[in-house]
Length: 332
Image (tube, rainbow, N blue to C red; front, side, top):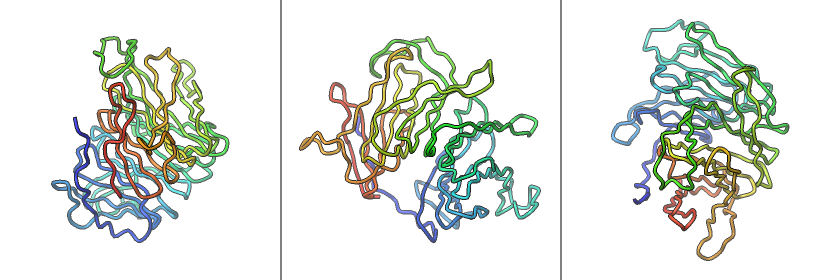
């Protein structure tokens, strides 16, 4: 199956400064972008193109690093995080609806929560898999990770704990269902031995990746494993969806100009780390031309997109018996 990318479609966002993130909602009908101009913009997407004037959400007082859509079963909800140390939760309530207190209602969107437990830039946010409920995890330059759990009665439980001493740069949830079958590759048949898990991975300026699990008895997050391999800040980390198949894959991108794929065949196996080789077939050098900023898996978890500081995006797949190979690249 080819993973060739279609021709890129440019979007005129009208942002007045660098764009840091762009995220489509669950149905691919809306595109949210955020920028150093301190705004978030939401576009309607029709037939693959952004149409009409965007909704502009204001309130952050510094660069907005990331946006993240909640699963639509919880409503039309968007989270944003910023260099100003705050996380905002926005909910679409329709024109003229909502409390509208303190200028919180903008263009039919209401700011329903302002999360202020962090003391430095909040660099990354991620909603948990929807079957775990509306839970948002946040990673900050203050070295801490916070987790917001939205309760049925409208209240919010917030926990915060130290994760990376020199700063947490990225966070990504594990799939909520874990296959306990002992498989070696995704080509094997999935088994019925599935178990639920509440787990995420973080990346830090300490050059480390850390895996955290929720201890149901003590009701707290505990560090389960540390994965080494990078020689500089880990800029991004992404846990691959597994659609019930055995094996786990985590991709990490670093300031050291490498991308590592961390994999293991079963929950009891050790993690093995494999670098992507962008210079093949000429060279086995694992270094990209510049620092690697972002990694993102396809919905099926079989294609990895890599965004490099040189402005190029490349798509990677695991070939049968061939390791990871670049199947497409284009300039962003």
